[in-house]
Image (cartoon, rainbow, N blue to C red; front, side):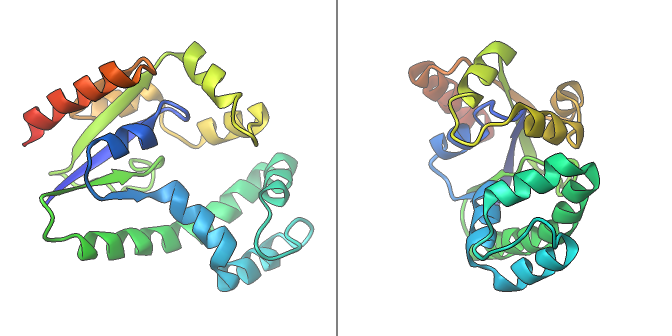
Length: 189
């Protein structure tokens, strides 16, 4: 089985690119959302760490955002609790799809959390900063302060590009992006 990781800047279109391959996709962001909505054990651990912010189950994103904006250490507390759960979910996904030709790992902190393996094919998704910010501002819960805090825990785009095996430019045009994906698929397979 080929492991294909899709990396890039926040808002560069990693998730959209991941799904264009037509392969099983593990989305760390989706798993985090599920954990916030469904995992009471995680809720109680988080409530214990952030009692002034986490009040109700399912976990309210606004409460998390307040905690993160209040103190940088709170983001570290959240990630320290949630990353092991997400990693476990990823391992379950990989085992479940072991007989597939390939899988996609859509994990924003792929390098930072040392999930990368030597044989992984890593695709860096590049988007123009102006276009990315324009798209991000359309998101319901977009907050520039949170965006900047999240960027600080990620490797720079230059480092991600260097560590990646393939590169794709996302100009946010579906037709040209599909064409680029098809070219990448022919290179990979």
